[in-house]
Length: 309
Image (cartoon, rainbow, N blue to C red; front, side, top):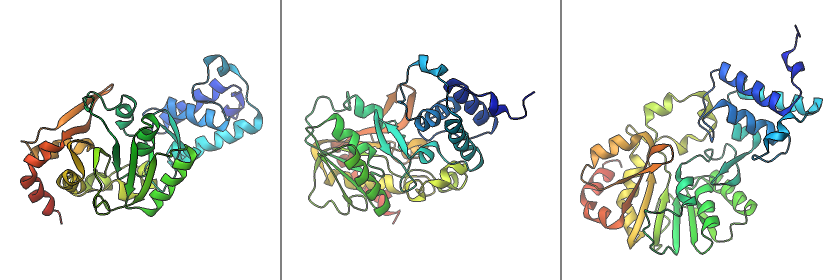
């Protein structure tokens, strides 16, 4: 029996299989771009070998050099021992078919909103014209940049409270040549006086205090500012619902991700007609709501939001 199991690993597929097995055996938490060990191992191997993510199966039997194998195995060990998310190990994450720089200045890009962007936000937009769109709580800039990429005739703004996140977003703008996107600092809508949009898209912090405190180690590398949102996860969402009508056109649309806080939101605002969006993998806690609907229920929304301070 060979003393070092890694000595028996020779090909790309050997390393992917080995990494996936080690990850599964190590009880890792998945959820940062990938939801399984095999995809994470594949990303680490192909990234290290400077190969594309859609590499054909025929290349799986290609042999790796000793130096390449050592580099891959070192990343595997860091993933296992330090619980660092794969995107932070490689410095990149794929979102809506685009490759973004990813590091600890912002959350790892992973929102199901990517699917909406690629489908042109239909049928939710209903064919209405969009000239200006806003990505509120932009983080790495992935949603804003992807919107600008798939809709080059749109003018897209991305705003965030974090200077670190905005610096990363600016780097991603340059990386992906997003000339129709601009980023600037704003605490939600506070810095957007006089700005109006036909579409506002937001993936704000929505994790409850209790859930944030209990998150697996992988999430400790991400900025808590992008996760924690009060006892029910709705501290920021309610303020967004309150203020969005001031920045939406009369027939404007708001799309917002609230994750598991969906249940608390429906309980607080049972009369609001939120359209909960179905994705390829099912419902993901993302709703679309019309500006007119927010105006109708503004008194109750304002009451709840103002109570949060």
